Image (tube, rainbow, N blue to C red; front, side):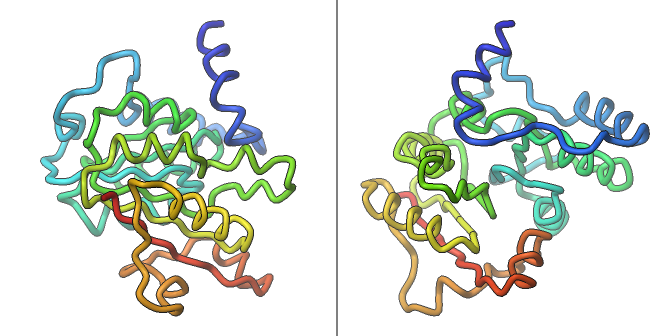
Length: 233
């Protein structure tokens, strides 16, 4: 009951359903065993040095919020073995897909969290992250639901607390209203500076960008993605 109450206070503000189709038996096994190995336990205090969370030695820490099926996160984990990655994803089906992939290719530089990323951000020590990715988040397109968008003054305060000075916040979306929303919120926040010198910058994918299924859908529906980068001052 305590956990359920905790979720009702925070999680419901930022994402909708937690489950989709019934997961297959093999996925259920992978999910259970994978979470035993990779899931962060927020009941224990966070270590002062987050590198201690990982099986492999790491020199920097990066968080991806809402990794979906994990396409981008798995690519980054493989490409940057000296970086410790934390992936947050409350949707059970997405986490199950990720755990299935990890049964084939384990990763010593990865940990995950299967609940609201706001809880994780509040658990992390101050100035402990080098990078935060928020890629194709739920846009909550209806105006009455905009308060449920993850980008908010409250969450930018959270980002500012856990990011090191000079750390990056990267945001990608194909929904114009959410892109404008994010620009307005970040430019109004004293801790963040938008990194763009010319108009084409924000339509240029990040170096080594791994396209996601959400981006593929956007392309099919003739929507253009914006890639925004903000620096923690």
